[in-house]
Amino acid sequence: MPLIRPFGINEFWIIVLAAQWTIALSAIAFAGGGIGGLLIALMRVSDAKWPRLIATGFIRVFQGTPLLMQLFLVFFGMNILGFAINPWLAATVALTLHASAFLGEIWRGCIEAVPPGQREAATALGLRYFNRMRYVVLPQASKIAVAPTVGFLVQLIKGTSLAAIIGFTELTRQGQIINNATFSPFMVFGTVAAVYFVLCWPLSVLARRMEIRFSRATAR
Amino acid sequence: MYNFNFEPVFAGFDQLLLGAWLTIQLSVAAMIIGLIVSIACAAGKTSGIAPLRFLIDAYIEVIRNTPFLVQIFFIFFGLPSLGIFLTPNSAALVALVVNFGAYGTEIIRAGIESIQKGQIEAGTALGLSKLQIFRYIIMKPALRTVYPSLTSQFIYLMLTSSVVSAISADDLAAAGNNLQSQTFASFEVYIVITIMYLVMSVGFSTIFSAIEKAAFKYPLSR
Image 1 (tube, rainbow over the protein chains, first blue to last red):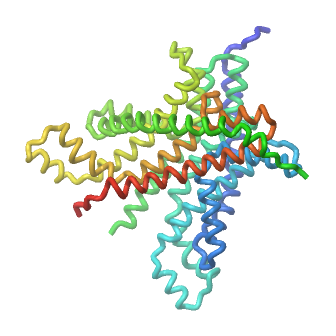
Image 2: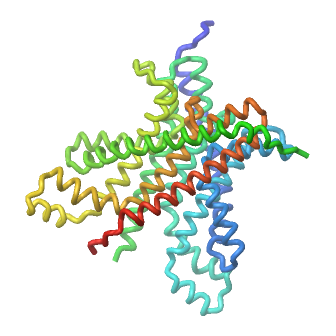
Image 3: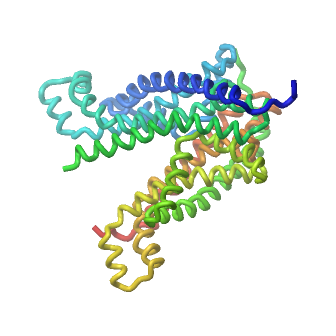
């Protein structure tokens, strides 16, 4: 067997199939980030001072530091807390926290975009914080939130590529491995980029369309 | 119980400071060149020449829908097969410029489209040349409109630049990787570096809002 194998159809499929790990990682981080993001957004608009401050600090830190460092800190931090080194778990936790901060900030904006009269009317009807959010504010905010949320999903899918640096074998890492065996970086990273493009582009187009449709629907 | 040991980190702190300086240099250089690319592409996009517009659109979509890490791998490892050899540092700069250019074009284009047609017609009526119209009537107010988006894009660029350590270009994250492999105090090194990035992004956004207050003092037309 030759030392360097050629880049053929098998290598191509190995890279394409590695996209399943990118999709899995994105889906878990998106689901976890959705729960965390809702919590952060609600804390951020709460009437009490402390939840608001904690949420603001959380968003500041995660939006003001590189995702790569967040991954490193969770990766090495878990070891300190006594967990075995596990790239899968570290990537999931770091990306979930990252997504929570970004979705929290996006959704805070959407909650605040609901006209204040709605909230005041709900308060006047005797609804407390929970019911006011549940039945009046969040249903209206969620309509505004769809387009920017899909836009963030694109950013999250691209962000999962950094998990390759801590050794989690997803699309980019698989590309590096195949590149080490075939030494045809042009083809390998071209293929990797094409797979990301196929994953992200439809979402970007969808987000843009929804945004246009939404702004037309609300324009008076 | 783990014992935190920050001593080796502070012993090598000058390395980290140098790394931070390199990150700032890299980001500022990438922003300045990237801004020129953005303005050129935005001008091309609004020019009405169809093939040019298609090419610029393709560039923007490809860059915005692929990860920066893959872009830098493609530039650093892939381009040599086309005969283009770059050192890690210049590959890092090229990748950041190409990346910033795509996002910057969209931002600048939005600014240009916010200029009302009447303004440009008024410029033509006053006998200004095409270049003068582009510079004084379109770009100046457009840059003011998009200033906040441009500055937050710059901070995002600076944070993204940490990824260039993956091809061992010199920056703060790479300085951290070196220090980490000398001292084995991984967590301590990275927590200090993360705080340094946070200080830089907070510092830059403070500087940018001070510039905004000083430079855009003249009143809006509306």
